[in-house]
Length: 367
Image 1 (cartoon, rainbow, N blue to C red):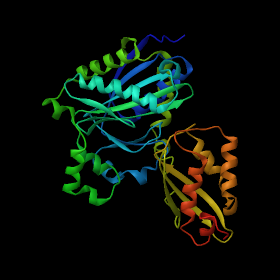
Image 2: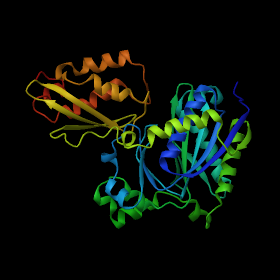
Image 3: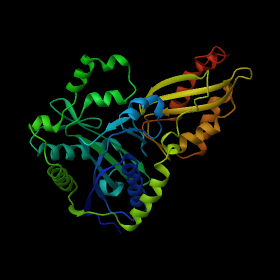
Image 4: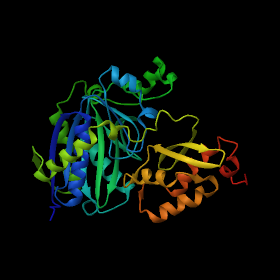
């Protein structure tokens, strides 16, 4: 039986991206199985660019810049957008369950955890405050971004604290319009974030930051802290299994469509759960969808739900698209954060609207 009165605290140190993300999976799976205690993990990354689980590396990152500058590329086990990490940030993660938190509502969970994190940051000498939905700011400037995802009864909630962050480097890693890399745009981006070093006038010891955050979480949850310096055997076993799969190009580039595909129809949809992208390979002569690729910064569990949906839509007559999507979600249980089957239908219809063959279907008129 897991102890609800204790929060284990572990610092897994400065690591490669593949190792940190394999630890994500190992700790979450172990927690779900009951072989991990409720845990607060601190972590740091060697320079890397991370895409969300459902994103395409080629669409989100400047891979040439990453290769030239020794920046690893990896794929997270959770959804969300692309981010840049280096040694100048401290990551913190909570592995808890719904019973520990007393709710399964993500907005309430985010508020409770972010309020606690803000108090821990404030104790270092700044005025940090929670900004809904999931940011922490100082004087209107972001100092920590957060996000969470459920896996069964377990939740992984993650945050990043900016210590001495290089905004310009981040902008050059992400695939964004060239105009956002102008001196004025970079200066504007810097003005929207806050570094703890600048606010305090000196670089705070990492240990002090961790102690302050841990104490604040313990107070918020009404638990004691148990500091540890090692994973247990079950976690180590899970870690080795996860690393073997994730430290590979197959894992990193799994949602990138083949470069040989040409003439694709592409569509976007800004859903309540995040930006969605779709690309379709069409057989125009038969008015059929040959292949679908769906990517974006949304959250869906199980992780392979989107891959299974893509497979189910191969060689689909355009006129049967809606029925096939609804049939798929009727047969596959999926946890979706602020998403519905209609969002998947919309992004695919937006792609179909790029061709005269299918424009009638996209807006509901007979073709």
